[in-house]
Amino acid sequence: MTYKRAAKRGKRSQEFDSDRFVDAEAAALYTEKFSTLTPLVEREVSLEDFSHISLPQLFLTRKWEPLLVNLASPSAQLVREFYSNIHDISDSKHFSVFLRGHHFRVTPDFLSQMLSFPRVENPLYPYSATTCPLLNILTSFLANRPLPFDGKGFSAVSFTSEVMLISRIIGTNILPAQKLSALSLDRAKFLYAFMHNDSIDLGSVMCAHIVKSFNSRKAGLYLPYACAIQKLLLMLEIPYPSSFPRMDTPAKIGLNTLTQIISHKKKAQSASSSTIPAHVPSYMTDNKYMMESMKLLLERTSSMMSEISLLKADSQLTRTEVLHMQGTQEKLVEAMARLIHDNDLLTAATSVLQAESSKNRADIQWIRQYLGQMEAAAAAAPTLAPTNPSTNPSSAFPSSSQPHPSDTEYFSSDGDNHDDLSDME
Image 1 (cartoon, rainbow, N blue to C red):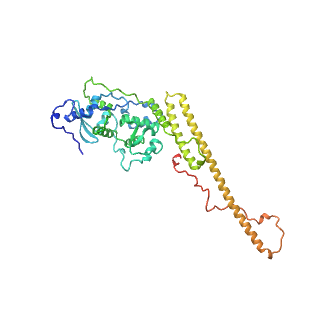
Image 2: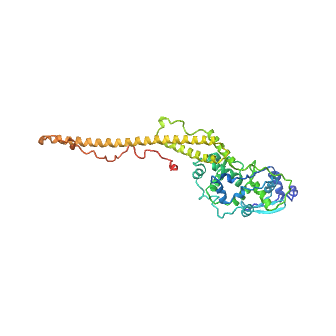
Image 3: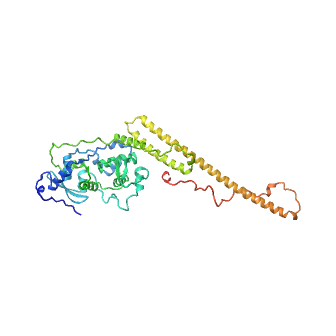
């Protein structure tokens, strides 16, 4: 369906600045909506600060780094005029813009050429009904564990520190968002596709995001891609008054950002109630409980080791902080080792009981055979001649050979509950 914006009739349609607006409707949109909205300014990203993790390669492989470095300082006035003058929207990927006397058609190809990133034909993202990952798979990939979905979104602190960092960059430069502390399901899918190396056509994503923002009626709306829009004006050599003030450029995303993310994540975890009990009650010392505790400890240990690796790379962190985190991790490992030892003891005890049970059944069978022979001998005694006792009484006893397996095992090999432990392998 084609959406072509036409000027409204009336006095207002005849009174507008034709150097700034394509028509009266654009002038009205500027006055009533866009003139008070705040552009979202992208942030420079110091990719070299993250050479110890996979983050730089994710962007470099896709050749998206032009959106992360050498950003143009934007003018809020021009960004607002850009959005006010969007018209002739064919679909989510094609629309026209008039800006300071210049007309141009915005398409994925146009953005790809102007902003220097490649097009992708037949991208896997956005997912179809058949290609979309299951929710448990998606959240396990981002958070190392399945996350419940409340119908709204996910808290960013639920993800690993590295995923939180990548989400921050995506939500600032690639798919700008007003709120970075939480992700909608759609944004979580985009983040999964990006980190999972699924193909994405960035030009189409940007066009759709601009059109969505243009049509949005949300209160407190922000205008995405301020720096990218400013770069378009420079590439197209569109003149504008030099007196226009530029927006302040936020600090770079670098190691300090990672430190803040880790600190915020630690505070969030400390604020939540701990899921690991201080001690194991005597009435809960069974295999299932210990296995669940071991799984939880392994997850916490893995997360802690990952965070320590990131922390060591930050030169601004003190050695004391790193050693403290290492000590905490070692305590978790020791606690896990104790649980494993206790479980081994319980397993050994189970094996002993199984062996004793088998031995008892063999002894009972042997006694029954012996008593049966004694009864038979007593019944035959009147007709047999007396004989001297054998010099080897035990030779009359049946052999206590290895007992046959019982039809019913009290301690079967399936007694240990190992549900939900497949991810520990």
